[in-house]
Every structure is written in C-alpha cells, then in structure tokens.
Amino acid sequence: MKIKLFTTGGTIDKVYFDKRSEYQVGEPKIGGILREVNVNFEYECESLLQKDSIDMTEKDRELISEKITLDKHQHIIVTHGTDTMIQTAQKLQTMPNKVVVFTGSLEPAIFKSSDAIFNIGCAVGAVQSLPPGVYITMNGRIFDPHKVRKNLELNLFEDA
Image (cartoon, rainbow, N blue to C red):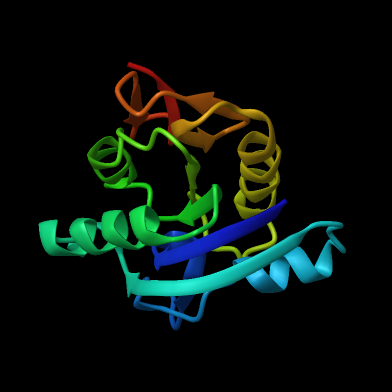
C-alpha cells in the first residue's frame, strides 16, 4: 500500500520570525517527519497550497477535492490548517473508493511541543485501517467531519 500525502499549509508548516507572531507558511514538513521516524511504508508527497486555512477559499477547496478525486491512490492523508479543516473535509464527504484522512497541528511542527508528529502518526494508522470515507484525526481521535468541532477555549478537537 502506498499512501499519498497532500499538503495545503496551515500551522503544521508555519515558520515564525519574531515574538510578535509574524509568520509565513513554509515548506511542507510531513515528508521530513516521516523520514526522521523511519517509517516502513511507501508514500508520495504533493504540495497543493501553502496557506493558512483562514485564507482558504472555495476555489482552494475545489482544487483539493479535484486533486483527491483524480488521484490514483486509495489511501490519502491531507495536512491542513485546523481553522477550516472541518469545512474542507465536509466538502469531500463523498469518496466511495478512497480513505481520506485530514490532520494538522495546533502548534507548528518545528516547535518541540508540537502535536504534529503525534497527529501524523494517528493519520497514518487511520488511513491504513479505516473503511473508505473522509475522516479527521486530531488529538488522538478519529472524527466524522460532520460530528466534530474545534474547541478554541480548550484548543482541541471534540465531538460536536
């Protein structure tokens, strides 16, 4: 099984420049993370966007949907910003022959305290074991995109 990884930007790929939180969405981090942890599966990485998800447009979501629909792989992970991840995943809810798992992080992957590595690991396990459909994995859980919300107060994803 080969896993296709699509990256779209978001906090997971952010690079901060100063203490006032000025940042850029940098190069995708997932490929480097998977190399560092010495995974034993084949994967292919493709960068679609380098945007904060707050700046995502309907056109961006259409691009993501089209790329996933047309891709030959059946197991797909999408790294995405957490602010609008739910909306993008909901747009893709009809994927009858593919397992699509969205994940991201609440802190940039370059931070030692980041949840990025854990969330990517959960997404890798989920994409290999779930039936066809679209899912979100964050905070150690797998969610249906129509039954999840981001709790800004607690800074985590939970059942809606």
